[in-house]
Length: 360
Image: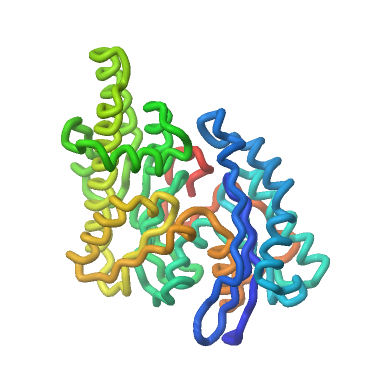
């Protein structure tokens, strides 16, 4: 199965409805189209993603996204060689929307169906963008997930560590909410932090006193809440510069933790071809800079996808579907939506559940 393949990908695991067409051949992969319908406006008044609202929006938009993706690619559905769809993990109502759409398209056309783990989509993105060879280290860092993965093959992932509570993206969102900033919180906090003093507030660096690559961000969030309350008590509110300093201190703490844990993970992975980062939080320029420095110190190439491929998208799902199809890994109409789906089934389950879906 080494010839040219063109796949339609569908994604609806959280609050982005997406469809894309990707073509892969001997000379590499090309994203022919990528459509993402965000839901920020639908959830803005609630300070976070509301699963029921998200699921309804996915059901209303998924077929429209498919039509737009095919139109942008200039190809009919009959020109596809297969259909890939996120089958988990995520908010189950949302996952169901794309899975049922993909199953309907597969049943109507006879096209092969490939269920994709959403996390695998992120983890395999460096192969889509840079043709990175196995094995490599991946830091998946997003709103609902954070884990270090040794990616050894299309369906072979070894988890070296992960968050035992909040994911970094969730912590950024909660920080923004505590400080009265708009959602999504990551870009808002980063913008404020750019004008702040990261040294003013002494925030903890959780779990750095313990060995290993596990992470924790719940205590950092609590420390920020206490610092905010102290500012309010002293000043009767949160002046602009105080808010900027709080954001800068929080972001610096997250970056310090991820940088040190990345250094430890690299030590555990001799002989890798590179260190890659993916997920929504990978769009943070400060974090990227710290991780790039860690990789350089270890003498390992650093890779980060374009910003449009950091957040949830269907191009990564289409590509992962092509990879799985080439490996002979396909599904049938019995494919089920899964709220939890660990990439490394041999590792202990991570605790907790993130705002943007169940951890795996």
